[in-house]
Length: 222
Image (cartoon, rainbow, N blue to C red; front, top):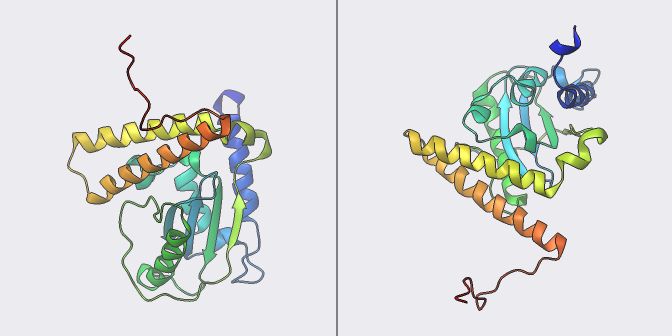
């Protein structure tokens, strides 16, 4: 492939990390690779370890995750619900012998509730509310970081992440203003705004910038 036809270097590096994760052993199916699992649940985490998306698949993890993260559009990406730039870690639960979405539903809901309860925002960015089912015992998972060392410093920088998150919110808000949308998209907008405010606050604290108080004058008449 000619150099000009290759994807950008960051994309190639992330694809290489994804390939390494997909080649890891599937603890639910000895002798198999997790990327080849034909059914299961997956989750994405941001640079603070916050869960930002939960999904399930009845195709291989290798195909499904690539659709989200390496340029093949997914509904969550197209609707500006999920920014692939924010994904730092992925976690995969292979569920052998379950090849239908109906049978996978309890596993997806269990993962969703587990991650929701562990989130500082008590929420995940999914547009749709995952239908409640009975909770089930989860199989062992595989978790890995898709951001290589070469990209880590820039990608995890607070100012870069604030800018990306603000841009995602702007695109999501514009989409909402231009068409009839689900209540889930509005919930996602609210959660993204809360996540942005938290991240900006953490950056201010990190830099030692004094925060305004209620008693501060916002305008100087002089």
